[in-house]
Image 1: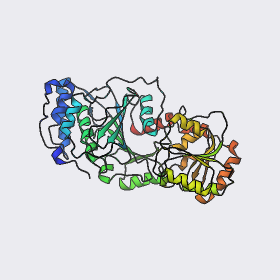
Image 2: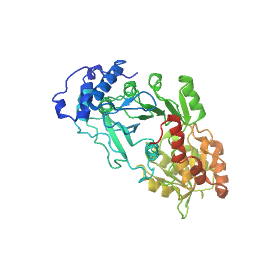
Image 3: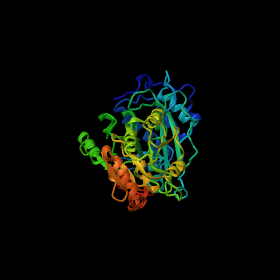
Image 4: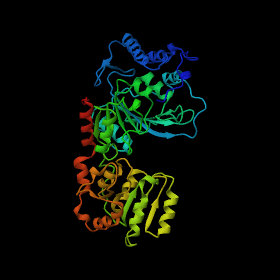
Length: 456
């Protein structure tokens, strides 16, 4: 288990922090921050905090699928927070402020606070990357009233909240304590102590420290690895989750093996929660036979596509779109050496509207990876009207390949399936299959049934 530095947790007073100058609803959180928060003592802290709030504001409890959860900023709003494992910033700070010091920042209002009004649910479309679509779908469906996406910052002074999509969605960055995994953050802990834990906490990828999850003990906690391993966190961390979303049955079996009885669901956040308003067919010429939208990284296995192209007529033309990745130059050089007909775009990546336009310039999409989570691009291709050829050894996501949506083939047979699909494009109806099964309204209904939160 990754533990916070005890020196960051020892009792101390806020320098210059006058409780009388803080908003009334945040006084209790400032007092709370002066108490050490190690181990089981945190439960007593929350009892104390709850009693303080009840004394100040009367009974403000509400049921959240378990024990009563006290919210500092509003007792009527349901909040959902997604903690992504995305990291920005250059170098880690040599000195990290204590939780108490971060509590002072959050309590003063200098870094903002959660929204305290209900969002309008009818005036927006569920659109964005796969990180945003699940929370926005929950907001649109009325399961929650406010959603945020939290990411990590390596250096001092995390950026101010990104409010470009506010109040519909707020993005926040929190200073990391260091490079250790799962990720630990005094800054994030201080926000939770100041404003209270969210009703639903979604943690993706590399995860967060056990301390943060214990601080959110009354939240409904959801985990998804967004990768081939079902769990990328140690057992002492994964045991805290109420639901693990997986990309394949074997991943669910792995979770059950580690934690018998833990609830799982094959509902990968990438290809599920798909948005048919983001990706759609566009009339026009299709100069490319194949498109591959994937990071320029080894696990995406561009080599499989290149070797297939080398066995096909040179008239077969492909387009590779890189969002990011360190292998872009190498892949360009390799394609040139092999004398295959491939064009490249990026990195950096292009906006979603341009991704959709580029997909519409091709006849089929490919997914070449093996050790990969269920890629979001599977259903994104399909919504743009492209049937998909996937590697038959793909670890997660083959359930989206049906006779209507595409084909699966081994690496050695990839070239044959490309030829067959290009000759039979009219037999596929990928967009309709996704609309009927995997767009966000279907996915959010499944999620709502799993977490047991009624729309309100």
